[in-house]
Image 1 (cartoon, rainbow, N blue to C red):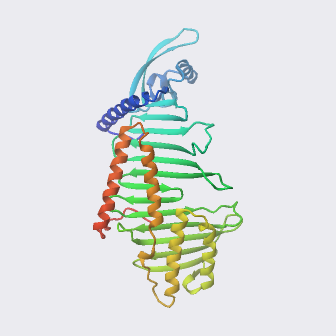
Image 2: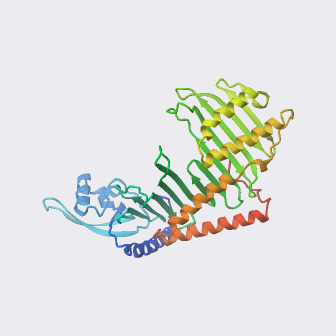
Image 3: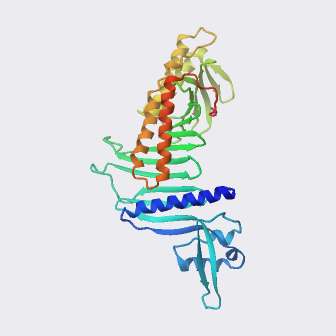
Length: 402
């Protein structure tokens, strides 16, 4: 558990319990039932005076109300508890009876079922609240119900930070692939906003407007047609122009070992560099070797053949850098015009993340989480409007490319 000073511990417990009461009021209107379980226990007598078998005996007596392992194995304080309860221990043969005051730092609501879904809550005394939803087993996708949405959420009552991960399964019209799966994430941590859509990760520094785009396509040893892995990274200025971008593409042997590496770098400051590195470390300038440059294009094709936003982004960057190379083969420095980099696929990926978060927001039973989402979305809109007026506010950079 995160160590908090006494003042912040008091604030965290107070706010968590307030959020718990609000959530309880909401879920009671759902006409569902659940059971409450208390965890992260602390009780010194259970640690010093009881044997392990006695603790399990006490836990079974009240099952499934309490989890007491933490109290038995640890003497460490859990800080200010969310709740305290008195448990009565009686030995099997009645020779021992003792009342124990046990503190608990976590409250879970378990097995909250509706017709289609199951939900779970966890409230922690360090200020973290978690909420998740899964679709009940056996619920099949049909034309009437063509999608399933699962999600996990968490937020901190002591800050604006939150984390939402969403999995979406949908029916498709494709003959061979009937189901489509998409993964999303919206996360705010210390003023860095992370948006993920499948293999696209967008990290935005809300204080500067700078964005780091990262796409990773791993080598799949089971794919006969594709023996490459691709890493794409780009830093975008607040006005959506590309400051620096790179593609690193590695070819692999059948045993998975790297056989060679192609690397394309483009920046406003240094122009374009394109190199090949052999397995033995030999470096070849691709601007002076058309055969290897063509080979790089052919290797990229298996990775970008599917119509995905991430493939469009990688393909656009690869095309724009190589067009610049071919136009300026005789130049010492190959300049890169950042306006050639198409932002549409990135904007569409960001829009997809925001839209699905908005879609589930109305069913979230935690007012504190909704408040943080709304605040974050307003901040994003504000920053986007500022980008139109201010093209040069990119002096501070918290995001770093590898």
